[in-house]
Length: 220
Image (tube, rainbow, N blue to C red; front, side, top):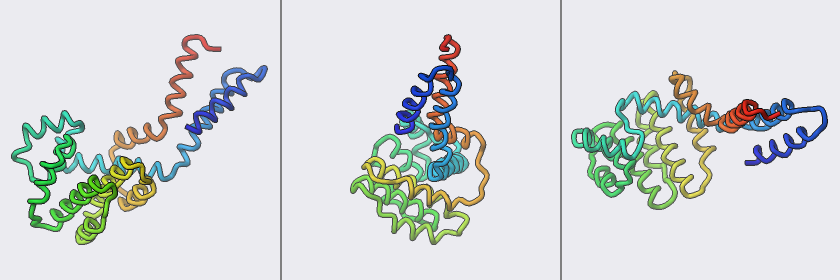
């Protein structure tokens, strides 16, 4: 919002100066809106973490639904035969919290992976009820995993924490950005990176579109 106001004020002032014309105004507005996004290191770490998490979730579950309607269809089709914790995660998307929590509470972990997944879900459920996530049980379960398996669960826990915190108007960016560091050097599909980069640079991209439309319709 600050960048928009500043770009409008400075751009309007430059445009009003005799002899400068439109192009310096466009350039200044783009610089003012692009530089803060480009220098937002936490923002880029968050976008990278989200891109990696999305890709990893797709790798682990190729038919992962993306919307509540898709989750309902998935539950009607594959839900009954799916593992309990997977079904509980999808139930969360449909806001059927009581059913999801009952599945998680009844689940008995057989492996350290099972325990980490269960503890993450418990932390998320408790956080939704209390307004803050207590990560200690989930982190203890994650630390029992082999090092290579830990980043996915740490990022997933950080995402649940960010979701609860943002819903309760609490700070969340710094913690999620720090959790994103745990993924190290990994391969992330370009389409996921591009999608999240577009979100980080959405304001200057929107300005470019507005300027392009203005030029086409004859703004001089």
